Length: 181
Image (cartoon, rainbow, N blue to C red; front, side):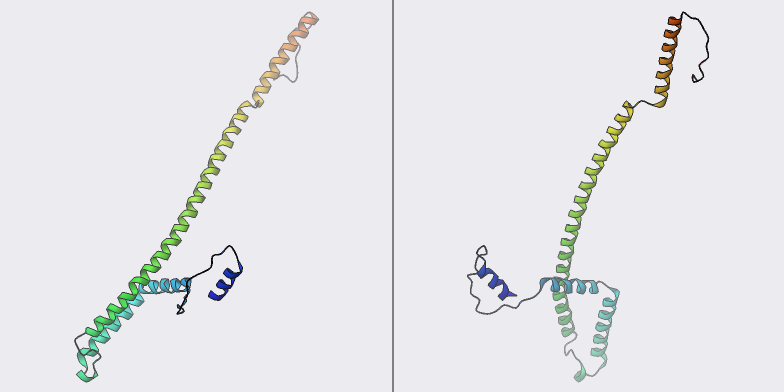
C-alpha cells in the first residue's frame, strides 16, 4: 500500500513528496482492525465468562502450587510468577480498554452530532409548520362562513323586497317568499 501511495505522489504535482528516507521499513498495521480487536477484547473482559475463566485460572494456579511437590510447581517462589502474569495481563488490558473507549467516544460524538442536526432540522420544520398553520388560520378568518353568507343574503333579499315594495307602491304587502328561512 505504501508503494502505491508513493507512486501516486510522484505522478501528482499537488501532493508534496516525502523527503524522509526510511532505512528500516516500519511494520504496518490496520488501525481499524486493531481497534476492532481492542473492542472485542474489552467486551470479552467485561463478561462473567472472563471473570469465571480468570478465577478458575488463579484457583488452579494457587491449588497446584500449594499441593504438588516442589519440583513440579510452576512458581518456585510463592505466587511471584502469578503476580507477574496478572500484572502483564493488566498492563495490556488497560490500553486496549482505553482504545476501545476512545473509539466508542468517537462513535458517540458522531451520533450526538447527527442527533443535533436532526433536532435542528426538526425544529426548523416545526417552526415552518407553525407559521403555515398561523397563515391558514388567518386565511380561514378572512373566508366568509356559511352563516355569514346566509345573513348577508337575507339582508340583501330584505333590501330588494323593500325596494320592490317601494317601487310597486306596496301593492302586495305580505307576499310569502318560499326560499326565505
